[in-house]
Amino acid sequence: MAHSPTEASAAHSGGPRRLFVGDLHGCLHELDELLQRFGFRAGIDRLYSVGDIIGKGPEVTGTLRRLRDLGAGAVLGNHDVALLESARLERSGRKPKYRDYIDSLGDEAAEWIAWLGSWPYHLDLGDILLVHAGLQPDIEDPARMAPRILTQIRTWDGKGEELNREGDPPWFECLVRKETIVFGHWAKRGLIDLPKFKGLDTACVYGGKLTGWCPEEDRFLQVDAARAYAPIHYH
Ligand SMILES: [Mn+2]
Image 1 (tube, rainbow, N blue to C red):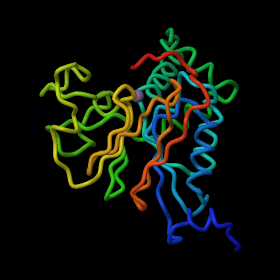
Image 2: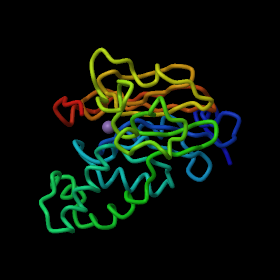
Image 3: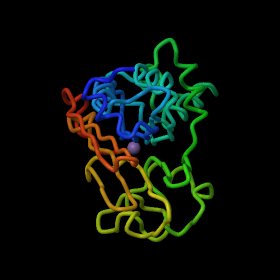
Image 4: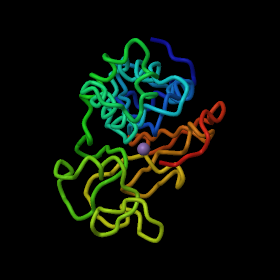
């Protein structure tokens, strides 16, 4: 199969590559641009999302569909969890807090909720551990960490009560691990590029950038948001 010069260089050595992408919040346009610039080869390369597909942004179902069609791996973010919790409340006849998240899925809500419900809180790829927010520093096994920690932690108070407190150190400064941890959830802080910690939330939905990271090429790719889709509200 013939390659254009651009495709040939993007194809690297030809082996499969992994592309990890930061918090999407429905930013399908930027995801597609990132995939194109990476030279993503469906069926060869593998896409992984750090979660937070739901909420705030313009094309939530389109983004979910793209992830599903590409067979992407994904972990649950706090906004994805808020959707699942709202769906659960609604089924039990109570008033969901995030009714708009359910509405954003349109007629296919039940189908997407079922799919999201199958996502894990962390994904262990051997050399890389994928999680939405981060890890609890005083526990070794992520399966023993509370979903609240895995989807919300930014700073560590030594107990896991306050997860986002000014003055407390970032969770990733409080532990040493063998694997590289890939995560999102900290748009205010932006790109985190430490040898063992790659933080990919660069505020795309607020008009920032969508960030991808490829371990096989050890490089970041960034796409500017076409516009700000939501007022800045970091939570
Ligand atoms: Mn988040």
